[in-house]
Image (cartoon, rainbow, N blue to C red; front, side, top):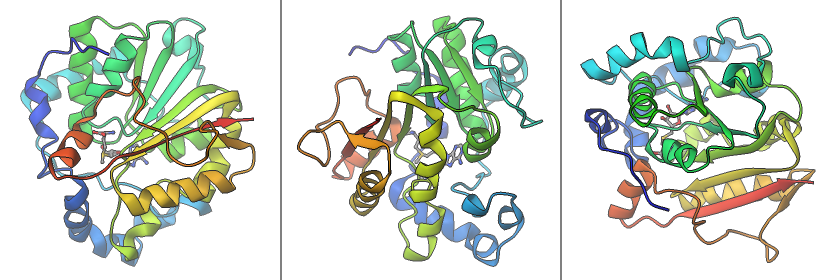
Length: 270
Ligand SMILES: C[S@@+](CC[C@H](N)C(=O)[O-])C[C@H]1O[C@@H](n2cnc3c(N)ncnc32)[C@H](O)[C@@H]1O
């Protein structure tokens, strides 16, 4: 798959210093007190996700990202503040198969997929404001009409805004690995998460994951293997070779530089 995505000033906002596998522990450490003591996140309504999978980092927004949020946000970012069910087809202005990506980061690989797959609607969910700003710039630059974004906790969006059998493909690439044992509870992928998202997938729909953190990969595989209604697309079981349809992500590129392996998984809803 080729990429025509031009570099943007925004790229640098997702630097190894602001968001990395190994740095996840550093990021987490800075916030561990509130996470461990239980603050607003633990007061959440959902017993399964009382502890959030993310920390909003005080990352620097570039002027271009700030402007993009202000000016392009109303065009491409869906307002889900009321957490009411979302009419996805209406949001895109057409009926088409729906790909949902959780945690698209700075958006490069997400946008590259959408650019090369114009017959599907791409709905990206991310909480990191510079990432949303950067992705808006890419959407506008490439003139894409099949992308919408949501700047909100994906768990809430999935539980409240998306209906049963509304998603053709759900993808989560390089979710924060939360490497320290005491932070594993913050990992997005766990049995409760799969119980929540499986009914949202169409029958025959796919859930796609990748990580560069081996022990998290093993956790993902175990959860997926144990999830009712989900079957491995790899007839031999286990991980699949890097799929050609998945562009290299920013996070993955850094992991490669550090010599990390990458583990891909694709399961289907029966
Ligand atoms: C390690 S980064 C990976 C970004 C991108 N997928 C990549 O590979 O470069 C994980 C991303 O997931 C986002 N994230 C984590 N939990 C989330 C949630 N519950 N809802 C929305 N985004 C979330 C974080 O803000 C972060 O940008």
